Length: 130
Image 1 (cartoon, one colour):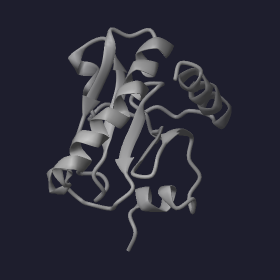
Image 2 (cartoon, rainbow, N blue to C red):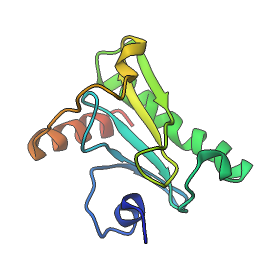
Image 3 (cartoon, rainbow, N blue to C red):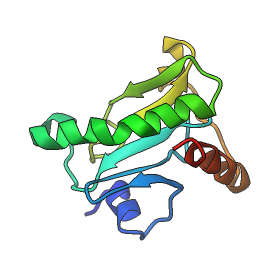
Image 4 (cartoon, rainbow, N blue to C red):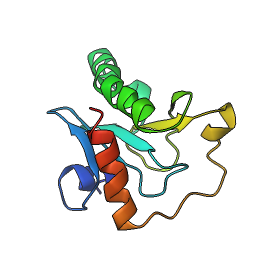
């Protein structure tokens, strides 16, 4: 059975796309820790990050780099944090999160509920910086 991320990649489930190429997709997390929280996934469904080939791992970070810079420019934060947990969805993914402290990457905290209108504003805010 396809993961939710594979269903997003195929277009079966809509997403708030930030960037895409033939191997990767970046989109807003619909249950973000903070506004500007982006997920970056390889299009190939592989469960664990380190089960990906070396070239995929390298290209993944290069793909994420301009997205992270756009997040840093779009939001009032000290930097864009990166986290790879991989327990929620059996499809390797990284979280890019605007942070001001290490606690901003605490995934045990309650997630935000963001309206579609606000998601569109957040998406545009990041796209404007890409």
